Image (cartoon, rainbow, N blue to C red):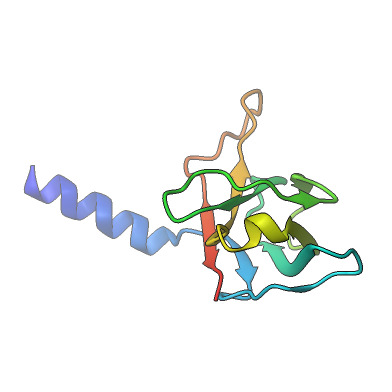
Length: 125
């Protein structure tokens, strides 16, 4: 049993796990062109050939959803492409927003099913 666990861990490390990237690590809120609304910008880069769609979410300190507005909640990003996403939150909710996350959306009907879903979160300053 112990050898099987080590073999599995070694295999995963040797294969390398590719994921997507999101920057900045610690985004900040700035004023937007609309009074009472704050804005931040995140950049996503897709390093996964097996995933083309990512979902954006904003969460509070207990991982509850915080209302936000963005051009897209689900973003289409082909392999090795990048996109900048502006996220808008009201003044009433900006103090609640602690994390912004991007989550890979897996296709159920694909013949090349990915084994691992990736979720990357950044913490607001």
